[in-house]
Image (cartoon, rainbow, N blue to C red; front, side, top):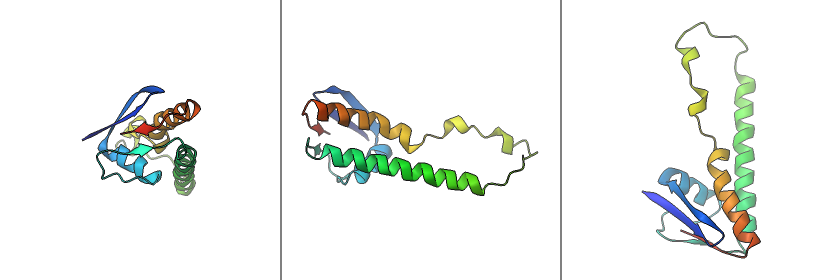
Amino acid sequence: MLYKFKSRSTADLIMLEPTARQILQIIGKDPDGQHGIVTVAQIPGAIAALEAAVDAAENLGRADKDKAPDYASTNEDDQQVNEGEVIELRQRAVPFIDMLRRSAAENNDVIW
């Protein structure tokens, strides 16, 4: 299932269900509802919640890297990891945060 977020301030933002559900849960909205709204009054809180979640995810990632052994693997399979395939929460949340900021600046709600 796809989620389509709309605002009069921006182009539509389309997300796959797992990403949209995660973002909606972070901002305190019901991801099970087919339709919803982030009002202009709710936007600052939603942005703050998303930024806090992104920071927490990045700090968790740094802690995991600090625990990793400092030797290089000689196993060829270990060296074949494609780090570019991992998409972090920041990359998924930034377009939505941008939509929220633009909408707040023009006093428009965001709906889905």
